[in-house]
Image 1 (spheres, rainbow, N blue to C red):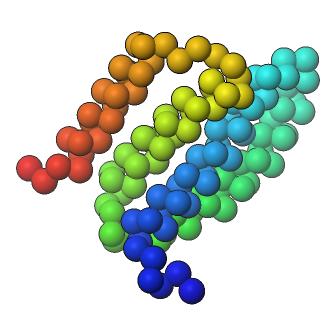
Image 2: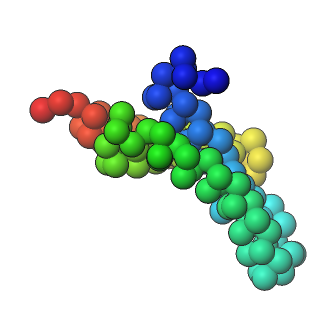
Image 3: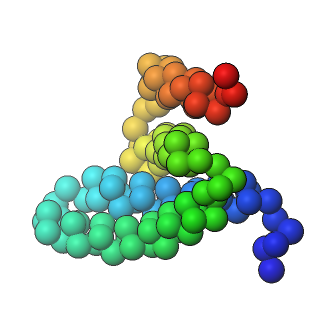
Length: 117
């Protein structure tokens, strides 16, 4: 069914889904400080299950087209990008210039990883 879709697009799409779940699992509970720690750990584990349901296939599909370092780099860039949106829209935190600059430097590191030297 997806045989006509490029591997890179499938991999990145799965990683986007994975990172959305991961971000909510790791940081979503911060909006609910009165909920006990064991409750948020349990809920986070349940959310993280869905992260793995996307992450593992993304790596399996993408490996060979991308090497492991490239897959991890893509995952980190997506993670930071999704986190920036999440922190502003869900947690209502400010996106400061130094955060953007720091994240941009990490994107610069991705250039170094993907460039053929």
